[in-house]
Length: 246
Image (cartoon, rainbow, N blue to C red):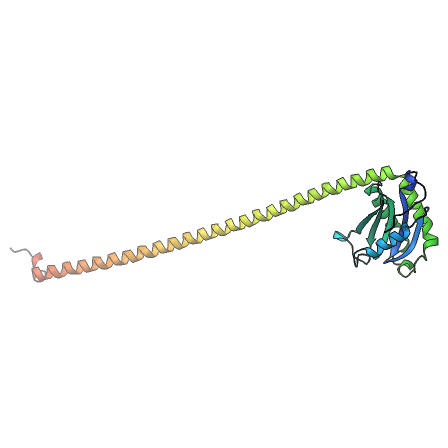
C-alpha cells in the first residue's frame, strides 16, 4: 500500500486533516482535500477492507457507531460507520483521537441532518461532491480552529462517561446485593415457617404420645383393679369379710 503524499511538509494545523469523505457502502458520495497524493486511493482500499457488513446498518454496542482506524506512513485512516454510511478522515498520526472523533461525529450529524432518509440513500458515487464537498471543508476548518477546546470537551465527556459507568456498576452491584439480601430474607422466612411447623408437629406428637401413655396406664390400672377384686372375692367368699360378727 503506497503512502499518502500530501503537498508540503510544514507540519502546522493546516496539515492535520488531509482528506475526508462520506460514503454509502463503498460508494464515495462526497469528498474534500486541498492536498495532492494517493491517499484517496488508499482510503478507498481501506473502505473496501472494512469488516463484512460493517458499512451496513450495524451499529456498535448500545447502538453506538462502529469505529475503525488504519495506519500508513505516519498517517491514520479513520472511519466512523453508522446506518449504512461511512465517514472517513485521513490525518497525521500526531493528531489526537479526540480531535478525529470530534470531526467524524460533527460530519455524521450534519450529513444525516441534511440527507438522512433523503436523496443520499439513492445517490450515485460523487453525485453530492459539488454541494457537500465545500461543507466538508467547513467542518475541517472548524475543527482545526477549535481543536484545543474540542479536545478538552471530549476529555471531560470521557471522564463523565467513566464516572457514569462506575456509578451504574455500583448501582448494579447494590441491586445484586439487594437481591441476595432479599433471597436470604426469603430463606430465613422459610426456615422460620418450617420451624413453626416443626414445633406444631412436635406438640401434636407429644399430645398423642401423652394420650397413648394415659390409655396404657388406665388399662394397666383397670387390670390391676380387676385382679384385686378377683382376689378379694376369692379370699372373702363374696363380701362377707366386710361384715362384723356380734
